[in-house]
Amino acid sequence: MSKRVERPGVRNGYDLWAPSYDRTPNPLVALDRRYAIAHLGPRAGERVLDAGCGTGINLRSIATAGAVAVGLDFSMGMLRAAQHAVPGAMLAQADLNSELPLERSVFDALLCSLVSEHLTNLSTFFSETFAVLRRGGRFVFSAFHPEIARAGVEANFEQNSVEYRLGAEPHSTDDYLNRMDDAGFRCLRARDYVVDDVLVAEIPWAVKYLGRPLLLIVDAARP
Image (cartoon, rainbow, N blue to C red; front, side):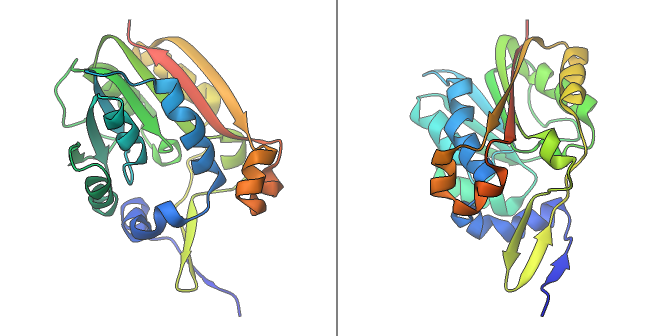
């Protein structure tokens, strides 16, 4: 008997996924947790925004570094999980494809982790992230690698014999870099991260991606 497939939409999908998200073996998430915070390098006393904070795993690392942690997410389910994970973080619901409900030029650093495939308005998103950063602020953008997304792979999870698919916008690396440049970001550096033997030992089914780029991270700065 084949399982039922449903497309609940991004917000409802992540609301459904939130309670089990951190228990779902996911090689992309595992790679992101290995590298994204290392790229960001949060420092004590900084004000750091996690745009698309999910369950708060990266927010926790930001707060542990002594920075002021602020998180935005589209999903109230994810925000509830983040509130539980990082009680001291400041959290708000926001659509990253629209104007951000934040003051301008207030953040020292900004992380956007694994939201890329759900961004339908790249120009608005990168203009808004540029606007809320201080001069000299750092931006780390980690993304589901476009090569895999364009192959038809998308965010998905299973519950009660139902597979929920959340879609993936077919952006390219150049789309990201060009829209960042248009927004005013400089010092852009893109790096691919591939699935390795260590990750396969942790998540055996990830062997189908062994040696393939699964994560893209772009570092940028507001001049």
